[in-house]
Amino acid sequence: MIFLGILLCIAGIGFLCWLLFTLAVYALPFFVGVTAGVWAYGTGTGPIGAFIVGIAAAGATLAGCQFTFTFVRPVWVRLAVALLFAAPASIAGYHTTHGLAKLAMPSVGWQIAFSIISAIAVGIAAWVRLLAMAPPEPAMRGVARG
Image (cartoon, rainbow, N blue to C red; front, side, top):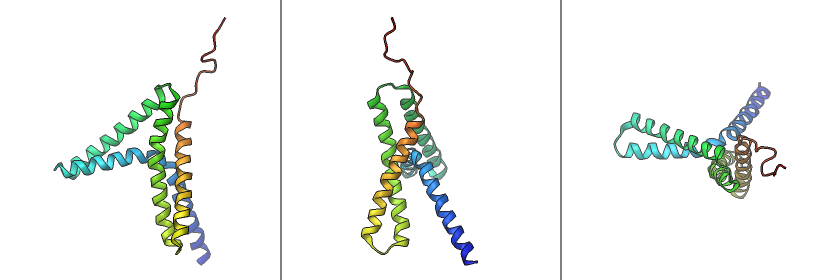
């Protein structure tokens, strides 16, 4: 029975890691939505109005950034948008790993070391996922035809 518990624990941790890497791209819209929702609640809209404002802000952020990333051609703009998405993903990866490391490791140094490594890995994963969503460039773009 203990063996089954260990296997389920490993499977649960694996599922949470997969979920973290999959949803890391959406950290920026989530942060914007939560911030807008908290602001709206603070101005007196109530919980339902704050939820609607948060959802609208998150959706607008995601749609605006994906539109910019898809249709704007300069590479530096695409890199800036990808960095804009990867930075909050790195922060989320750091704090997620730090919370789990606090449960498993007594050494503060190792907790921070694993958290930094995880932040880098999650940021790179978000960056790669975002770049994979970009439409491919035309093969003969910029080549003069004679």
